[in-house]
Amino acid sequence: MLHLICKVFYVSNQLQMCPFLMEQGALDPWMGLFRTILDMPCPDDLIKPTEETQEIVARDKSIYWKIKSIVAKITYRTFVKYSKPAFVE
Image (cartoon, rainbow, N blue to C red):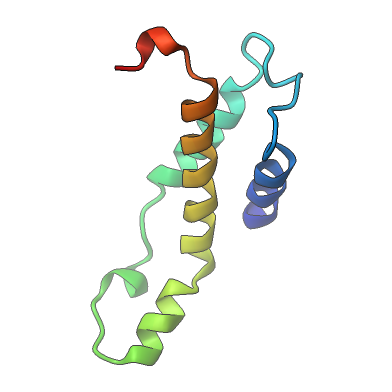
């Protein structure tokens, strides 16, 4: 379910941010959710290094990494496109 929510948000705001989200404080709950997702601990079975290539491929295709990947893309795009230029070095 979390993967679907993140993917819908990513696709719906791909070209332009929704006007509702550009209002004061409307994007804060979303960024809080994305921060929580990025701070989630990694499952133990994905941390342990393995020698077999099949397990490495399975680890890379894990839904856990897909969710984190989408959230990272969302936050990167949001900060690059819509951040205030005064705060950017």
